[in-house]
Length: 220
Image (cartoon, rainbow, N blue to C red; front, side, top):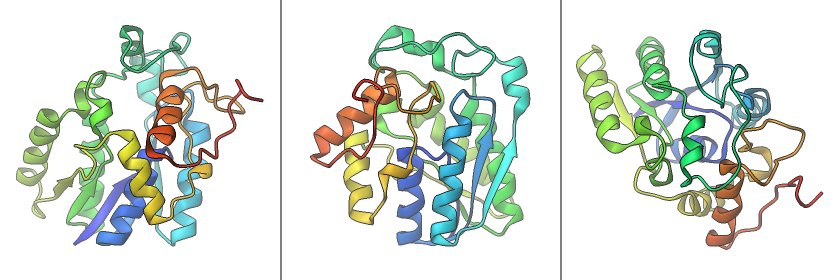
């Protein structure tokens, strides 16, 4: 099967890239610059992994989301909240229908470049906060993609029942260099160690029993 991978440059999507390379033939990977505070940290790492694996990499500008959407994750939004992902305040980082928009564009790109399937790294840890990461949403999008393309593009979500620790274990087995991934929503010089994505990243390595190569501001 020929696949196109949604690749942000974070732990999950980079692991999905290596998983897809192991399982299928990758025709390319696509990153979206939608005005998130950390896009400038993630996307160069996505490009690095694509270059390392010899995978074609496209970057699509979705600047309208930063201009018109309400979310503290965006440059136009407020301060990134700190604390665990499960905390109520982390809902402020939701970008409305982000995955719906990205999957729609990526589906068109997949059919255009001859891919049979699209790989997204949505996982079980996303479900509490992000409605467009939950399996009912993914099933609906999968149906729309199949019915809306001549290629009947398949939506593959290999990590949908895994937590981030499970993804870290999978990536370690596939040889992923997690030192070249980015999680922190604040997008500073170092991972802050305090926002929801940093807390989840720290916990994932601990629970997986894997060395965390990340340098955090709280330790610097």
